[in-house]
Length: 160
Image 1 (spheres, rainbow, N blue to C red):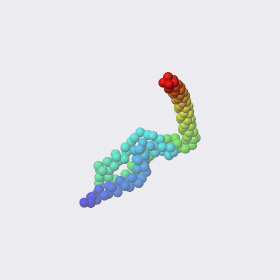
Image 2: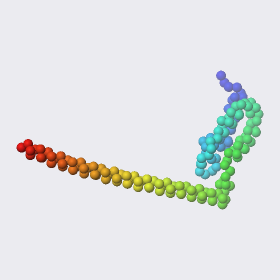
Image 3: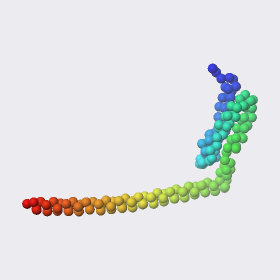
């Protein structure tokens, strides 16, 4: 059975709302990402999408009468969802923030490379110690083989 006119209209309204910037903002926020331009940074997880859709479903036909207002609300939500940080404004402050961010990631990468290098040195030392231990064990076993061969010769000479 087909849905009622109001259900179909509600679905169309939801599709229209999803096509606007609000849906982009909602999806990015739901994934925990910043809506600002540039690098995607981790943000707290918000669930705007389920709330907005449940409100549309709750009010049903009343929301259809408010479609013109819904688009205004979507623009307001889009502005609310933007991080409105200094980088969006541009100018000297945006450049300073970008430079600080680049410096932070440069230092972080440098520290990570240093830690990896130290780990590799430790691993090399560990393997060198293991190789030395193995060489000592090989020398002991060879010495033991020589001792056993001498005993074998002694036993062979006593028997004759």
